[in-house]
Every structure is written in C-alpha cells, then in structure tokens.
Length: 430
Image (cartoon, rainbow, N blue to C red):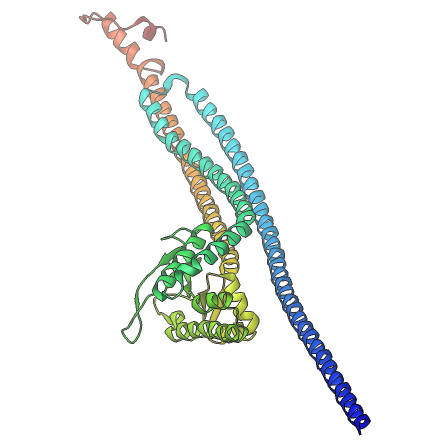
C-alpha cells in the first residue's frame, strides 16, 4: 500500500514538473514572438518613412528638371532678343552714318555754290533745323543702349534667382516649421502669417506691388456683397490671376507631436479635411467671376508649408483633381515661386517688346523727320538760288548790263551835274 502511495506521489510530482516546464517554455515563446512583432513593426515604420523620403526626393528632382528646362528656354529667348537688338543697333549705326554722309555732301554742295552769300540769319536757321535732328539721334541711341543694358541685367537676375530658388524654399520651410508651435490654435494669426509668406514670395520672385500685383483689393459682386482676394496678379494684355492664402496647421502640428498611432490617424484625417474645407469655402466665393477683372476660370489656393500639402496629397491622392474640378489649383511655396518666376520673366519680355516697339516708332519718326529736313533744305536752296538770281539781275541793271544805271549816272555827272559824292571806283571798273 505504501508503494502505491509512493508511485502516486511520484506521478503527481512528474506531472507538476511537466506542467511548470511547459508554462515556462510557452511564456518564453510568447515573449520572443511579441518582441519579434514589435521589431517588425518598427522596421515597417522605418521602411514607410524611407519610402516617403524617396517620394519627396523624386518630386524635388522633377521640379529641378522642369526649372532647368524653363531656364534653358528663357536663356534662348533672351539670346534671340539680344541678337535682334544688336542687329537693330547695327542698322541704326549704318543709317546714322549714311544720313550723316548724305547730309554732309548735300550741305557742302550748297555751301560751295553760295559761298559768302549766307548771312547770320541763314546760319541761325540752319542751327534751328539741325538741332532737333541731332537731339532725336542722341535720344534714339540712348534708348537702344538702355534696352541692351536692361536685357543683360534681366538675364543675370534670372540666373541668380533660379540659383537661390531652392535655398529660399528650404529656408521658408524651416521658418514655417519653427512658427507652427506659435501659430497653432490661432486661426486669424495663421491667416495673417500665410498672407505675409505669400507676399514675401511675390517680392522674392521679382514682382513689384502696385505694378505686377495688388493686395487686399475690394470688389462688389452681382449680389452687392464685398469680396476681397488676398492677391491679384496682373498679366500682360490686361489679364489677371487670383491667389488666396489658406493655412492648415493645427491638425498638422498635432499629428507630428502625437505618439499614439490611433490618434495620429484621426489627426491626419482632420488635416486632410481641413484642406478640403478651405477648398470648398474658396470655391463658393467664385473669385474668378468678378466682373471687374479678366481672370481665367480658376483660382490659385496657396498652402504656405510644402510638407503639409505633401502629407495631405499623399493620404488623399484625389485632392488635387477634386480641387481642379472646383476651379482651384493648389500651390505650395516651391511650385508658386517657380510659377511667379515664369510670370516675372514674361513681364520682362513684355517690357522689352514694348521698348522695341518704341524704338521702331522713334526710328520711323526719325526717318520722317530726316525726309522733312531734306525737303526744307531743298526749299532753302531754291530760295537762296532765287535770291542769287534776283541779286545778279539787279546788279546787271545797276552796273554791268547795257544802259546800266551806274554808267548813265556817271555820264550825267560828266555833263556838269552838281554832286557832293562820288561812286566807288570798283563800281566804275565793272
């Protein structure tokens, strides 16, 4: 009986030992599996961040390629314009040289034929005629040189502006991140800050307020309500484009500050919804239909932080296309700056074209003035020739012709007429 108890006790002890050993092994396996899951989650998060960084790098590279292509195109246009201006300048120099030579030959012929018959009055008349002609030539030459100088400066500014483009964008992005904490929760302050960033980009691009763009201009729509876009871009041919700044920072800042994954998902959704809300409100204003402006059928919605726009677009791929259907194009500092640089270059070309047209107009006026000068000079020569002929006819009647007055008067004197004066000897010798 004792032996049976011993066997039973041994069996129970062995069972307990096996149960304890199984529990320890199971706990160890569970802990290792948990650690492996955590490690894989961290590795997947790192891969996701790496993919996001690669996408951002790819977008930046594509932007650089587009900017380089735009730069090459503008350099080609500027080179063609420079060659055209140089050709016009050479033609002007040739025309000026030709006019000067023809005038000199014509003047020499007239002066040689008339010799000392010109009086001080004739000299004053010639100076009066020639002075406006000389002034026109000097002004024309100065205008050509100014256009040439402006073109060289524009090319230099364009190159320097593109070189600073990425540095400025990085600095602005950094400033935006630094201001996020100070601006969160204050919607009005965020709006003012966004407008300041927008104005700064406009000025950096080379546009001038009051000339190429206007800010906070009020209009009255057809319903009698006041409308005030943030910025109105002036384009050539009396066209306009509207830019309105919209800031979405609150949910964006909380998203990057939050560590809980579930809360981060909700905040990310709030951030995308905030951007969509701005789109909807801007679309309802219908700025593009303001009748006092000649605007295209879309408005630029400016988001002042590139990463904020990129995050929203990454998590809502339809964001951009939906905005386009609302007649809205979303722009960030980088894309807006590239667009404004292109507009600035277009304005420089427009100003240069206007100067070229002014040069052509003044060239035509100069040619017409020169033709008029030649006609006046011919009339002056004819009048001088007529005066010369009249003088010679009078001289014949006086002293050289048959029965002239000098000889007849001298005969009267010889006949005994009483006189107090005598005719000059040179008159009697003729």
